[in-house]
Image (cartoon, rainbow, N blue to C red; front, side, top):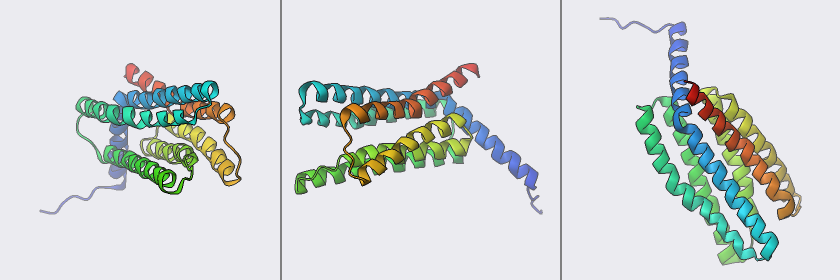
Length: 208
């Protein structure tokens, strides 16, 4: 028996339906994960900023690792709950997960590299982590937003990427990233990149 070929119109309808289902699943819980990371990063950044200003002790920079510890524990728990609530993963779901997996592995690699420079070469390369957070993370958010056609993710990621490009230029030009100037900018970037899109996704979830 000859198999019926799918027409171009049917193919577009299938892809559109898949994107719609993926978007619905992202809305149901995706905002919570964005908000967790956004508020976590902003809270730790504010804490480090305040302690640097009040104590002038560079050792407080080790508190940055709380982001990876807390976020690394919370994310798998929230992701499992989101998966249980949303059901079977589609191709778009898997693609989004793979994008963020690459981001996580890149974060670990960058952290280990910076540690290596510090421990074995006595060189401070931690500014690379700011560049990573404001280049790789926004790029992943924009990519996911384009895949599922979610404008809030594209807009939020673009805000973070714009700050990231500025940060890269400062590092390349040898401009010192002073806490009093850069920390508020870093906080604003993550508010625009994660807090606002997270609340938008949750708002959409409540209205469904």
